[in-house]
Length: 161
Image: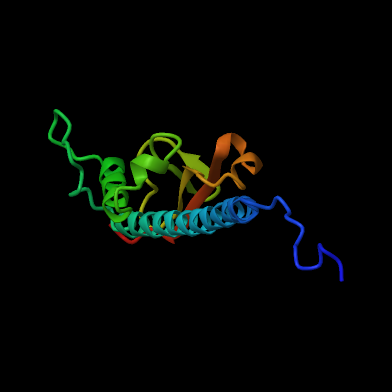
């Protein structure tokens, strides 16, 4: 029998579990942030698509009653009324995601810049360019400036008004 038979050799592994946990937890939290980030992006995109559709449904009627500020001549502008409808339907996201002020409107293949949103019977397309920032460390380097860029569109035909 050897004198050292019952004595175990001491190894210096104190704290190894903590280091392993730190590495695994970092990866798991990064993955969790990525999943939440994709879910939030999906919510924002679908909400904006819904808001643009509601704005188009309002636009095809030719109404102007939602214009928040009438002009000095007492007229309500159809474009401002449609933007107001989109803002009301977007749960407050319109001002956070829109990249340019206003809406691109096209009728019969050409863009309309006069604020009329097409005449009675015209097919119109409402289009808003949006961007939403990411907070995921995995996705951030893959996007330009760390932002999702997307466009929401809806096409409808104007009613008789």
